[in-house]
Length: 638
Image (cartoon, rainbow, N blue to C red; front, side, top):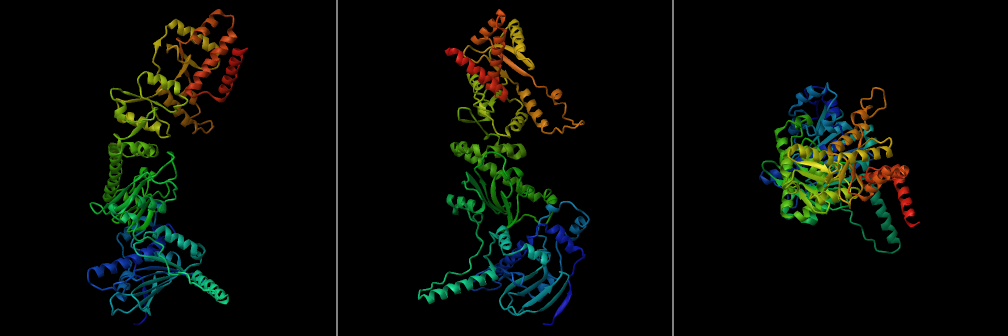
């Protein structure tokens, strides 16, 4: 055929700068696009064989070869797929046409926002090669027997030259002459890493060939062979056959009935750098109403917020697209780990458009439903196991309930609360006949309060996770008839008379100079401590708000948080146990008036003990408490 040259037909000469700036914000994306094109070419040919429109050898092996030549500074992508004729080259390469191209150009060429929000697959995959290449060559031969092989070449993606090619076999080879800038970035190791990132589950066997390294390997083997022969030893040639670097049938592509528990655990460790086995998983495999495949794992956690990077991997026809696409996967699901293959996902739009896409909304809702259904299923059929999992999944469930109304509706009846005695109950089981749930944030430090609450007939739940403060406020909003109260917020006993209360107030005020306290008198039992700190639930939550605002202080004159003492005054509510023999002795000492110093020191010690049991005694107070306690012990044996 005669050599033909021309200019690529494109509606605006600004298209390539836009591709570089907007379409492919990641420099390595061209590898994914070109390998994907190879995979598509193979898939098209296989489909034609299935339809009987062409034939293939019985033992036909389909492949994609990515070849890096460090000497020539070239990177090529080869497949034995459908190939192209000269007419198809003209149609698919020389005329850039993709859905919404002008809308895209109009929208983005004047804007400087949403860069990270653009996802690939705009139908311009081939042209991503010009991001990194000074010259791109296509050698292709169509599956149609009488079509001649064609060579297409361009240095800038605009001007091209077409000529005959000497290529013999069916398929396409795209060769990139890497630019100087690309050479500094894409060495052999980097290319292999990028292929692992995007193509680990490509549906066609993918082979990576480093020609320089291959030559070195051959030279080394030849050297070993000669050394063996010189020694008269037998030389056994190693198996140098190429091994594919991808798994063409990832576990999610199989039916759940074909997968064992061991398969799921092995796959989890292959994909995620986690030494611990997952707790359980959900295998999604459906064709209607969505084409969706995937596996979501519930990992063991430390029940604290961890890095969410790379936890939910999104694929399209087994080609990696991105991690954690919030528009598809609600962010609370990022606390899980897994792979989702969404072959119908419209990836040729910006992420802002994805937010409005009805298909995406339905897909997201369906994934939420599947996750909540799995949790309900485990709860109902294996409650004992569910309780064992709870310490690992509680943050996920609570965060999901806070973030997503549909998830809340489906999990509110299976959300567990751990009891101080080690058991677990749901909110309905806890509130059977009650409107208050008593809880502790520290079962050790608040043991005295827990004992009193349990004596009053309450089952005390442990809420010691970072998320719990917001979570209980949320549950109170959702359930107006239920209140959460920490065990130190209310004390039950016999109210003391006003005269005694006044005496005790004066006594402790004199002993605790500089401390703002409200003193109450209450009979709490002779076997209880002489005094308790009472902190109402409202006061505790206000204190936590104060602590949050403290972090925002700037120290400047116009600091809006500089008057926190006025906004959130700190006052201690001390409940004195009038049934305690020690309080009776303290009152007697004060009334005698002969040992005021000893009485004041004892009152201070009782107050410190109350704060210690409450968990609010500072280091200076603890030192004072221990010193006086040691003195009491020493006096008892003298």
